[in-house]
Image (tube, rainbow, N blue to C red; front, top):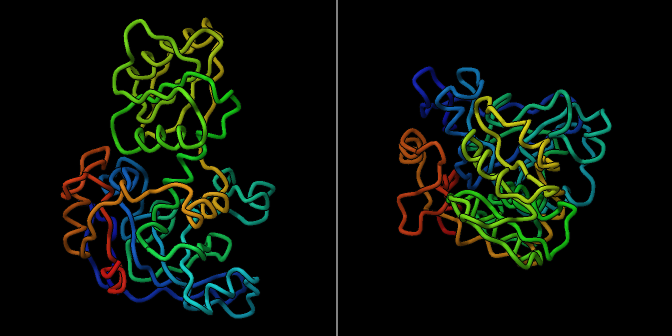
Length: 324
């Protein structure tokens, strides 16, 4: 099969054997249809995040389950996915499946969590083998491009789960796709006063500040824009350590809250119901060959595509995806 893997030079398109299902229950083989490019994938390809050579890159994707490992009891949702071709997407973190975080459906909180495309083979390939628990069925979604956007949508939806009134004045700091997605999700979820900008407005004060690309200068400016006693939300996952002004945060009595994901089942249900339209963030479909060029040429924000509207670059992993 074709796959885009991490190399010492960045990334390469290779031909490799299809992955084997483990000889134990609880695993699924998924034929991938569409995958999306995230700045995390760019960091991994460039070596800014730890990623072993020959690891298949990518963590955002949708596909169809084609087989389960022997002895698996996938349950009604996954059995339906196998029987009728229902799309599945993925939680990008694979945990130990035994701890409290994994049992609660939060494998990203597991101490042994490994991310697809970083700690284990990812989704820039024709097929992937993952734990059944990592597969999220989307029975009401028919466009694999939309299904592949589940992970960034769940990440943005998490910001709307912060415990503040819907009347709060919210500033989303940033200008890329993550910033605009978070801002529009917040507005769609009932927040009445949402501003999205790459520069904090002079003289303005906000109840909540959301960072979408962390660096020392941006965090300092955002902390000064949030009113004393307000909430500073950490959304991004920077590739390197970032210096912060802890004294400033303490002086202003800021509540600092990190957010990762809303429940993936909730995000999947919202997409299936057409609750939020993600198509403005979807870019052009690329072949493996052209997607490699996009991956290697992407800026650190991986925010733009060659398409006119600058949506998320997408990889067509299988021919059916090209008809979407």
